[in-house]
Each structure stands twice: as structure tokens, then as C-alpha cells.
Image 1 (cartoon, protein in one colour):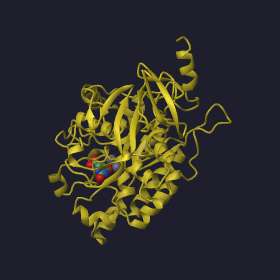
Image 2 (tube, helix red, strand yellow):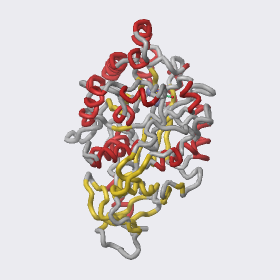
Image 3 (cartoon, rainbow, N blue to C red):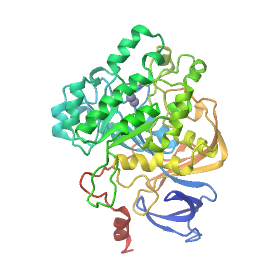
Image 4 (cartoon, rainbow, N blue to C red):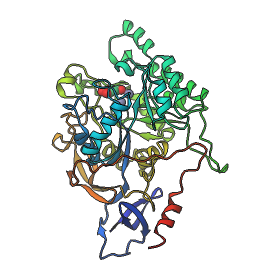
Length: 453
Ligand code: DOR
Ligand code: ZN
Ligand code: ZN
């Protein structure tokens, strides 16, 4: 099969090209006119690599009234996210055991339409399990919100030393003790969980990351100061080829809501603007935009809650379907370069989480594409959103550009907002081992693989 366009995103630039696809992978990238009569022609629409969202809460099996692997993955796919990572459930049951994780694997295999991975939850007690199991990544909460997933400093340090150094320890940083003290002094959620609360916790985690010289991934950083603190002096993964620089040991994500919303939106959101970490002041948001060069990826922290939950004060926003559209809207508005946006939603997360075959349009990679029309606009309309949340902080926003379709492993998976693939089409992602080894050279691999044809 062949697909072509005058604007295919290859190595950081839009170029005319015709892509050949063999069993879900990209074979060769040819000139635009190659096999013209057979190719599916996307004309002037852009072909961008599928997005990867390393931070979503798909809620199954804990709270399927809010989301499940079908609805959540459909929202992802419709929004150009071809691969997502699901965060641990907090209870019923918490995803902190092998049994709970296998149950999620079973459910996602049956229901997900997009490709997926999981982060296993860390507790103060499961340090031994994680040391023996060595899952590909672990999620740790330093904040107070999350039941048995809320770690003490020593509980966190056990995971810093127990999980293989090359595997990302994914951390939510908010200083519980500091927030509790501030609760006596201040009234609003934003004042209590202030930027200082996040920064203090980032500094604590980063110091341990450096002590153990390990991979650490910092979730949803909200200010330039946190990014600086997370990255300061953390270094890179050693690779065999001394001339090459390995991936950074400490990686950071920012969310769309901390970029596109601020505390100035709280009034409009009428109490539904509650999220952890909270929305920040406009001047912090402006600095966050300026820090994007130091940021490894954008991640949605898709945290669906029903309107009734929001009325009752639940923290979190749905966001997996609007993440890529918002970023591309910003590109078309001149706020950031296309190359930068694509790095943040595709190549950045693929490299940091060492995903095999994801994150680029290049031979040997999975044929995961977003077909994007920069000429058409899209209104964020609840009817078009697949999440069960039933609301969005961006409802009614007019966004520049529109996702026309999405390909996953060579299949036309979404067209015009409609799912074209069945529940269970999604597959678990494969992650490469990293430390001390070169990343597999996929270009070379593809040449060998296809040279016989
Ligand atoms: O606002 C939030 N909601 N922040 C988190 O860290 C968790 C999330 C949720 O699960 O609802
Ligand atoms: Zn979090
Ligand atoms: Zn989260």
C-alpha cells in the first residue's frame, strides 16, 4: 500500500513524498510521483507522525462510568494519539500488583483501539515486588491525593534504588507537608498547592534521581523553575558510541492545560477548573511557553471526571483528544514551530520511553500517521469528543486546522472523527532496553528487512 502527500513530515521538515507500507510498517519513502496511480493521495494535507501520550487515566476497571479502554482510546485516536500510556488505578483494585496489571492488560487487549502501555503503581510496600518484576516503568506519587499510591520520602527512595536505573520512574511532584501547612494559611486550591509546593517536591525527587544516577520522568511540570530544577546537572544515559549523546536521564512533560489555560480561566470554568497541580498565573504560563525547548514532551494527564464529580470538587481535566489539535492550533497561530510541536507529541515521548518503531516517519517505523488539514477549522464540540467525561475545559474553542484521519500500523483507524477499527485493534507497545546499549538502528534494520523484496 502507498500513501502520498505534498507535505509529509520527514526528519523535521514537510516534504512531498510517497510512503510505502508493508504489514503495518513503513517500508521506503519514495518521491511524490512514485506509484502515483496506486497511492492514496492526501494532496495538500499534512502527514504527521502519530502522537504518543505517556500520561492518561483510562479509569478501567476502577471507574468505568468515567472512562474505559474503549472510550478513552477512541478519544486518543480521534485526537491523533496513536499510542497512550495508562496510569495506575488508585483503588478497586490499585494497579500495584501483578494481578491488577494483568487484568488491565486483558481489558485493554480486548477493548483498546489505540496502541498502549502501562505504568505500574508504586506504594510504600511494593518495593520488593518492583525490584523482582522490573516493569518497564513505575508511577510514584509524592502528593497526598492518591490513597495507597501516596509515598513517604523513604518509600520513594526505595523505588529509586529498586527499579532498574534505565527504566523511567515516573513521578507526580507536589510537597504534601508544605501543602498541608499552607492549607492553614490560604484558602484557594491554587494558593495551597502553589508553584513552591511543586518546586520543593521536584527538587527532592531530582536530588534522588541524581544520587542514584537513574532515569526519572517528571509529570506535568507547571513552571520554568520546576523544569530547571528537574533537569539541573542530571546528565545523559551513557551509550557505547562515545561521540553520541544518550537520552537525558531526567525527562519532563508539560500538559496542554498548563499551557493553554491559567488561573484567569477559573471564573469561566465555574469551579470545574480544579486540577492537580493547579492552573497557574498568566505570567508563569508565559514563561512555561518560553521553556518548551527544555521540555521533552507534552502529555495530556487525561483525567476524566463526570460533571457530577466536578461539581463535588474532583480534580482533573479530560484532554487526550484535544492535545494534538491544541498544539497544531498554536503552530498555525505562530506560537511555536511545527517541528517543535511534533517533537513534543511524537518523537520526544518515543525516545524518552524507548518505544520501538514509534515517533517518526522513517523506514522500519510503524505506519502511524495523523492526516491534518491546516486550512479547515475545528470547533471543540462535545458531540465530537469520545471521552465519557461529557465536558471539556475547551468546549466551544475554535481551533485552527483539523485532523481529517488517523492511521495506526497502516490501517485507516479514524476518518472524519469516526472509528474505522474495532475494539481490540490496539496492541501493547514494545519498549527497547537502553542503558549501555545503542538504540537499535531502525533504518539499518529496515534496509535489511526489505532488501529481499
Ligand atoms: O488533577 C488530577 N487528577 N491530578 C492528578 O494527578 C490525578 C488526576 C486524576 O486521576 O483524576
Ligand atoms: Zn499527577
Ligand atoms: Zn495524572
